[in-house]
Length: 333
Image (cartoon, rainbow, N blue to C red; front, side, top):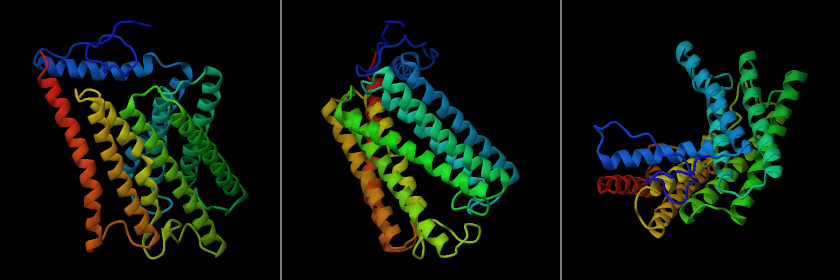
């Protein structure tokens, strides 16, 4: 493992090889910035133990499965709604793939022993892979994946999907506790990871609510082929309330990573991360309340304008980070 450190690599990132210079047409400061960014990403793989590389590889494979379905969807066409839509295997593959990769990155900031890391990593990768495979298989068979008990096979597959997501949630809980107990990340990244893990758990809680709600509809005689199992009240979109917190951890993590190249003090970096967390929490809160009240995520009413407040906080933190990174690169010689 190389001991050379890129001169542009933020101090909180692991050591890695010096980056390959960008073309001479790129200003020197920008070359240093891009080199540091590339080096920090390469180190995630180069210095990762096997139990961290496994979720990286599996996550990328799951994303590829989702993208493959997206390509087929673009070719054959079809609606984005309904239990047999190409949207479902597409979003499941991409979303679970991103989550698997992200949890591998989170593990790089945790003091994990190999004898713990390997079982947790295997459980995570197996459970997310089973979830994507189940949804993809049922779509290929032309039948709904969720709330489908039309045949013994369909019922067993739905039960297996429930077991797999339960294992995933267990892994997320363990990693969340570990992130709060001890992390090697600096304060801005620590806040990003901890808040993101809490948001990920909130998404799983909404997902459990969706399952309970759907099962109650099935017991009342509803069919997933003719009725939406994720609509609460008149128009409450439970999927939207589930999706919003699902990927907060990627937003927070990328923001904290960018701020590591900004030249700002850690205290100012932390304030920007906290601002983004507050904005995202507000966004989730509004989405959840509208769902509980049976309202669509967006409409033409004045109440929809409330979204502008949390979105404004997110925009300010993100734009400020980008401007500071650009200025830091411009001042380099």
